[in-house]
Image (cartoon, rainbow, N blue to C red; front, top):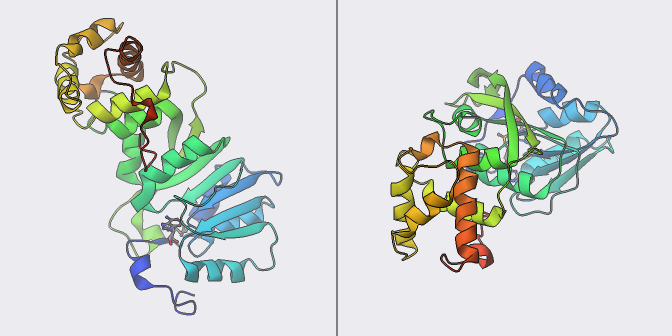
Length: 285
Ligand code: SAM
């Protein structure tokens, strides 16, 4: 199929396609689809997941960036009017309104696409395959080595459970990494920050240094904002739980929210600049 549709080899670089139908079917089953559901698939590839999603009778919207693969998908599913192929970049095309997301994501855009899905779609469940190390960071517990800025941001928005490991042998070409499937839900129960943009601003500012003590990381961050380091103690004092000598890696989501809420109060009091007009092209968090 790849030769027939002459896929640009440069565009395929680093992409591996799932070739194990039993695994593809298991992944789709994890979303517990009904024929009433509407599903988004990011990166259709050769359509192995698309096939099993479409089998359930639900509507599948599959976004694929590579024109040759879009032609292949359109030909393969020509007879099935419940499959719609959207040619484009999943980071920029308009996303369809869906109930569920099922994807073997392009690993090079894992972070950006995950946060786009979480910010823009109110899906009931997303069943997503990632590079194993990325999935480990998504679900890491405070105090562990995988706990990072990604973990804090993802934990704020979502609850994530690992559901299946997929070895490299299930793909062609065989990648050098293993993969993990997770189930993701929007987080419904609090705590939530007083202002999500302030939470994002603080996390972006301090979590480049997850091994640093909170006090040190806050100090570095304030210096980049040309602010006096003495503000650090004000931020810490206002929190209910953070002492300052904890490593960022060990702070719970509630601790980080409490730091963000301190920063929020200081913005309201005119002690910190207001970041809320700033835009980040990558929708960055
Ligand atoms: N779902 C297929 C499977 O499981 O075999 C393909 C998965 S492959 C890891 C990722 C697919 O995403 C490739 O077909 C690639 O062309 C496509 N892709 C890469 N970047 C993309 C983007 N920004 N937007 C949409 N599709 C993209």
